Image 1 (cartoon, rainbow, N blue to C red):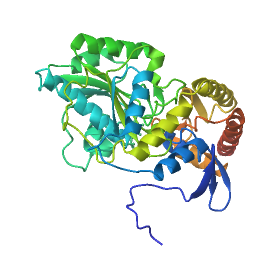
Image 2 (image 1 turned 120 degrees about the horizontal axis):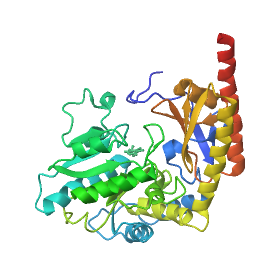
Image 3 (image 1 turned 90 degrees about the horizontal axis):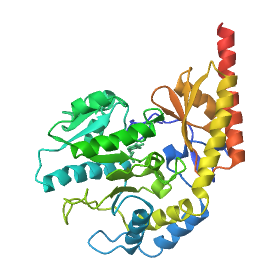
Amino acid sequence: MTSALLPNYARAPLAFVRGEGAWLVAEDGERYLDFGAGVAVNALGHAHPHLVAALTEQAGKVWHVSNLYQIPEGERLGRRFVEATFAEVAFFCNSGAEANEAAIKVARKYHAAGGHPERYRIVTFEGAFHGRTLATLAAGGQQKYIVGFGPKVDGFDQVPTGDFEALEAAIGPETAALMIEPIQGEGGVRVIPPADLRRLRETCDRHGLLLIMDEVQTGIGRTGKLFAHEWSGIAPDILSAAKGIGGGFPLGACLCTREAARGMIAGSHGSTFGGNPLAMAVGNAVLDVILSDGFLEHVAQTGLRLKQKLAALRDRHPRVIEDVRGEGLMIGLKLAVPNTEFAVSAREAHLLVIPAGDNVVRLIPPLIVTESDVDEAVRRLDAAAAGFEALRGAAE
Ligand SMILES: *Cc1c(COP(=O)(O)O)cnc(C)c1O
């Protein structure tokens, strides 16, 4: 039977009925090791007891009240982000693209409030992904996503990563901000060197620009810090978060300094669903775990183990795996075979991984994965890679 859904996704012929930790169970009872985590969303895995309890407890009280009223759970979540980061204020929404839309609006309004409404342009970087709304698509700059959807939203100038000459040339009297992912996720787990992030901070300061970090994928503990930019020692003015922040509940956030947010007053931005009590209860429960003693160290250590084992795997299968890159539990395998085919082979070995740009597959498991989950994932990747070696051998 043909699907009644818009055919905008290429879905695998597989449906899951339940999950537990890093494992998903399909309709036929088969178990899959989930190293995709719903694209870095299920930060605490599936059916985490603390999240289930927080969601069901709040569901029995009040789900939604609108932002016409006080939302104590949101005040608390905002306070916790302020205490844990560079930020002084938080705005909650429902997705990564919305968090970036908020970030872009905050940056533009900052300059307007300072008497420079002509400063609205934002410099972004090649290989970026910032979301699927019309403005965030223009920010990401990928032609294949932009063509056919009418005029591209104005106000975004793109330069290659690491090219500071091109960056200086792109900055003009209309530039408001730079926007960058500290590790490009969809672009293929391309790490921006910490020294480059520091240089971007310096460039912003020199030109009076705001620095926006898109940490939708890298944030909420993914790299072993609460936010990935912390590895570089610098702080942005504005940060967007989503994906892992709700552990699977739709939630996004835009975190800012008070100075960056100086243009935002009552009525200047909003969201009907954003920051509702249900979302805020879950967001607080996610932070309970992520900020608990030793959790981020666990992510860093497990990530290191994964990366080391994958380096050995690359040495064993150099004709399949070209490179291992990333930080913490955000690892990319740059492949010498087609990444989508490799992802299918991994799935046949009951391991879920996620293709990305630059012929990479991403390993972005729940942050609660154990050492034995990691070892099992590497065994299954070994099996998938060996399958390709056999094919290659036969062809030669
Ligand atoms: C996924 C992603 C987005 C978009 O998030 P949505 O929730 O799909 O809108 C934006 N930026 C980055 C870096 C992402 O990885």
